[in-house]
Length: 181
Image 1 (cartoon, one colour):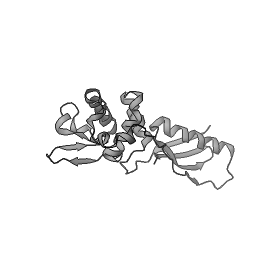
Image 2 (cartoon, rainbow, N blue to C red):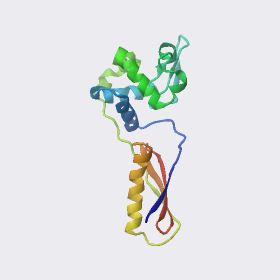
Image 3 (cartoon, helix red, strand yellow):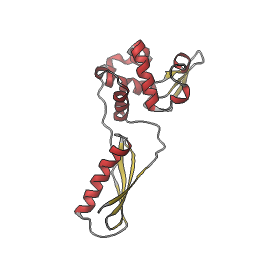
């Protein structure tokens, strides 16, 4: 029996991949025809940084991935949740349902790019393999690595990758998952 110990590497980056933002947009229920446009809006609004803020000339503050304005939308979308990319995207859907794409300055400025936007696939880093056993690599090791790769995405999120794989004992492995770039 293969035992895989799975851990998530909590990387300090607050930048999401376009693929991860696309998944949030889909999960929030945006119409299929505007999913990629919404990713483009997030690129121009926050550079995909879910902790981004912007203070406007009137003193109001925009928060998170879709730069939700706390002054306008704070009563519908609590400000303390807007740094969570899932909550921010759900709030963006709430805004979209009321005002459409024109609610975002980034769309008004970049509509020609955003209407035909192609989402970049997330890229996984090269897996670091640590071999504590120093024995020949076997098919069972390759099978365990494949299973760990698949499990990172299924257990944590579609934008998670296997970043480190350790053989720590016969049939026992440690897999560390991290975010895709």
